[in-house]
Length: 68
Image (cartoon, rainbow, N blue to C red; front, side, top):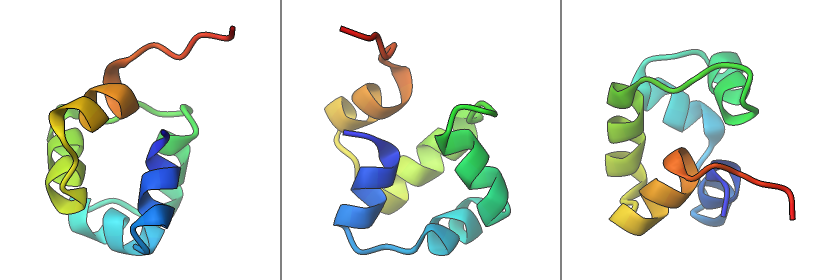
């Protein structure tokens, strides 16, 4: 599952997530798309806001995505 999918599935607006972590929605989009990296403080804030489990957080932010 991707961060975009979690945000959408939970019915939260991208702008609300961006506001919560103190960045512009455009910047959040660039981070989600892999153009920029998330700071650890942003990962923590997003995880708290979305109430991600440790497994979800690991999968979304730390597992290397590999083409099969």
